[in-house]
Image (tube, rainbow, N blue to C red; front, side, top):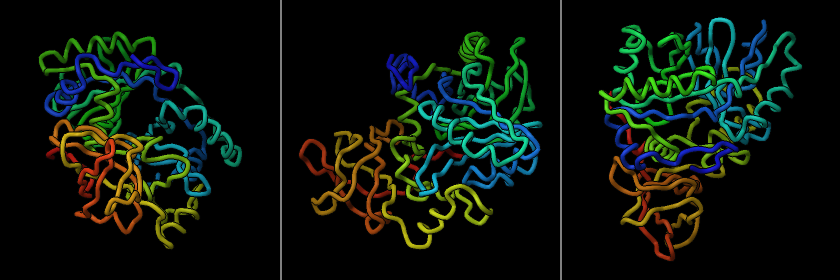
Length: 347
């Protein structure tokens, strides 16, 4: 157990390798109740959320859909990355645990310009469980019903399991199919035990922070504080696909437009590292023995079978196939720039 954003969190239950493998091949269950949840209501809720995020909220043409996006600073840096759900009567934002207070203050700072918009921070009363892996959907079908099969990726639904009211999105942070399930904090233990019990026949494993990190890294997903921060834009982080500069005004648009036009100062790359030594955050990324950047996240690629890393380099060194190196304890280990992600599940 470790302290994480003020929460006492499990790094692992059985082992990171066992938990990682379970999510890739069967199903894993994560307690991610440390995440924050905000609700936005009011006649201008759509306009407010659209102005605050970099992605285009109009992609959620009807309720019961979700969107991955970011809150961006006027200078282009990232306040946080998050998921926005359009529900029947409101919008739900799920934000990172370490940024709850900062995000709340950021949103409140702008909400006064949108008459009738109200914000509610429901983080303390809301628990969040993530059920991830190829057996996640069959398990949810057993508990909820066949309608689970009709929910698309980033779809949203509400239901009841053994008297427990819950809502969930077909979302996750592992690169696998799965669901992130919102439930009242008082019901979290009951739901956790129910999912573990019902999941036994599906090969379920309870999973901790360790596997959560190795899974998201294999999937090439950024982690706030590593590949995203207040000095790094979504464009630099390599998630420009989620930034819609042509949607109209939003906070940070001018800075991102300038980056797009004039070029980026740095680019996040994925590196396949030679040998067995593991790259770690802060290790130098080198070209011809000279430091050009640094690793932001690194680990053994448990499922892909080789050491992997993400890090920032100048754009001139970011092309796929580029041969670089990572300095690990004084040794230069070969590192090839590869396409993101390292691992992609079969459809």
